[in-house]
Image 1 (tube, rainbow, N blue to C red):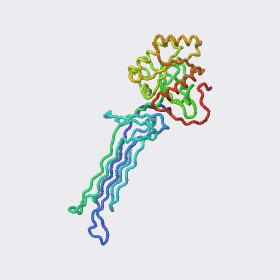
Image 2: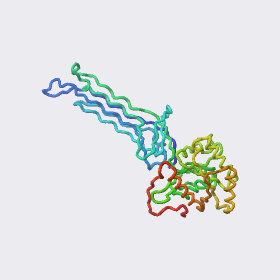
Image 3: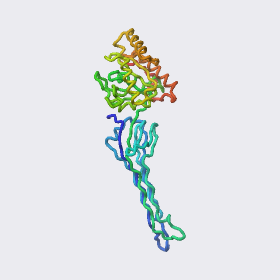
Length: 354
């Protein structure tokens, strides 16, 4: 299924049912009085988080959602039925705006969480409710009110603990394939990755974290160049960024880091200030001595004081230490605990598996 992270839909809640004007008519009961019942409330439109969804692609085919209308009131004080609610299932991490006014509606993160986005109309009042000592035969009723109708803009921001970023062909997709069960396309040309991928890194039963791979960034991504502007938002909820540096690139490692750092700062200063680790990739093309020299030169040129790792996404060299330190960082320093994952085997996962 094609990945879709933005969609516009129309939601229409049900109208309330009309009140009824009726009088009791039975043999031997003259002047039975009013017995018109109230209408039923209209159904509402709800958004509900479905953890099995990870894209808004379903809204490419269906864009209008309508809830049921409330039933009209009837004689013998019978109330109309309530309109059926319309429940729209969405992936976790979805943000919602009013498409016409730009008003913020809400955000849904947790499985099963619900948000009412269109309220059903209120029911009409039957004539039995208007009876009084001075109005014993009321002939008035009220119609049901109209339900809410609005256009909504949905935007999906992936939920991940770790975000991968770097220039095109830095090896992000290869690394997420190495660390997790995700299988994004890998090729030797720029912009092989056209949409984000999520991968779950399982360290041991019940322990692990989620990694997000986004398309490569280029200079000017924050202004719309390449694919970066659309997908940079998917790094918003990550707790640590892994900045991959391609040792096989014609551009210097320090130049690659400066390019990405500048785009992050232009897009969102808060994202630029997030914890970021440098990862030198494709070390299998260099000797260990040359890799160490690259690392020292990078630290010296950038005055880098943060974590720096050397890995090979192809052979798996250095991945075990990276996964171990990421797990420790997320479990010890983060405010929220690492996610508890459903395991299919009691055997701990190893990042260097074939």
